[in-house]
Length: 52
Image (cartoon, rainbow, N blue to C red; front, top):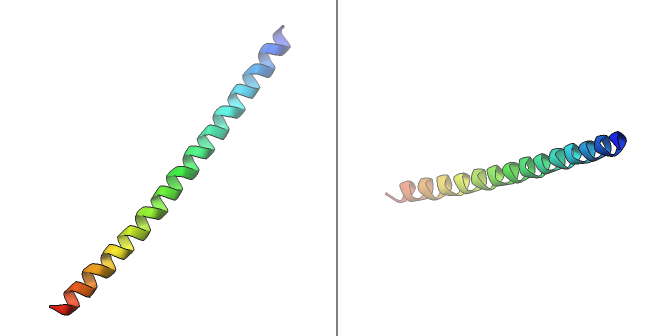
């Protein structure tokens, strides 16, 4: 009975850790997307300023 509880707890903790890794990966992807958007926006602004 105790062994089953321990195994269940270990599985639960592993799934939590995996979930956190997935979330961290999604946050990193979102940050990369934002960085790309910022670069594009800066290029557009710079191009616009060159036309003034």
